[in-house]
Length: 318
Image (cartoon, rainbow, N blue to C red; front, side, top):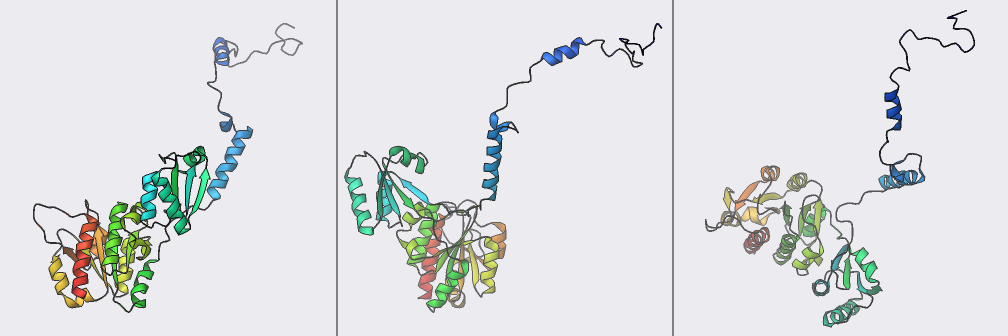
């Protein structure tokens, strides 16, 4: 019967319109490209993608190192000579194969032999890789990560010496040369240690070691996770905390004139040259001390300011 859709070969008409109408658009879409082929590592079922995923999983599970936990490289002939002269604790000296042996190289060999430092010859390519492609001139030295003391150790040093504690704390000092200079002043004027924040602050790098002129081997440097909290802990231990500030209400001569204050347990906080003490640290200090100077000079270098104050305290303590 005509129109019987159940017969063989019949086409059922849809009540929603003809689905084949305008099929040219679908054909065009089917012929369009799908863009560039993804890289193998970005294709979920590819072997390279699975290897990448495993590597990321291993890296995520690996314990993160603390700042300053990696060894440091001193690269260049002059730099290595100066590092050995400054008694920086170098663990090994690396020489590139085929490097010219000049006077500096021979001096390094002699100092390394005297101090028992390992001398190792490697390929130039390997030395490039180890030093991060630094300009090493065929010579580099490896410096181990600095072994920071615990903040409480600084007070313990004073107790062991039957002395009143004198600690220098740094707030926002980011130049390692300033840190080295302060360590040097601390060693010269009887301070029992230097405290630095763990983050956003200079650490005991090779540059700091060099500037300290060997004092870093005698003066312990401790790291604080939170400087403000550690200063409060020192206050609870009986220390008076004084911060250096250009607008401090107490002048340095007044500080050293107060025999009870200067002779007791004391923590001196030094801020950065530009910003000075941070707000929380300044609020934590018991006194803010200024260094009288000419009005034509706005501020002193952090290392210089620390040296002046430590010298004045040492004189007052006798």
